[in-house]
Image (tube, rainbow, N blue to C red; front, side, top):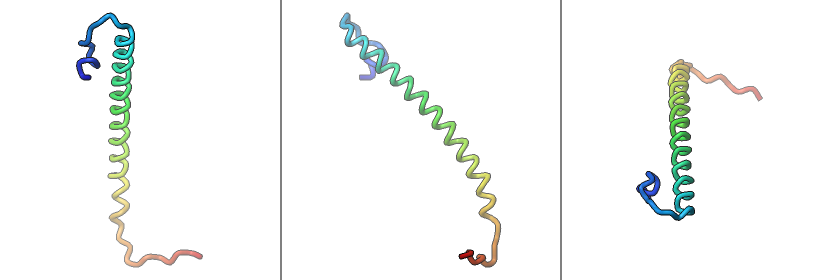
Length: 67
């Protein structure tokens, strides 16, 4: 499978070549999606670390909820 994705499978069968191109494009699409999601995750992690500073506020007694 890896050889097929990298283009090492030869042959004159157009179906094989078409499938190989389709799989190569799919791999590129998935790699791009992975990079995008990793960047988004890094952004969210950084934002969560900034927001964690609010958790350090010490409140001696919880205020009652309004009903």
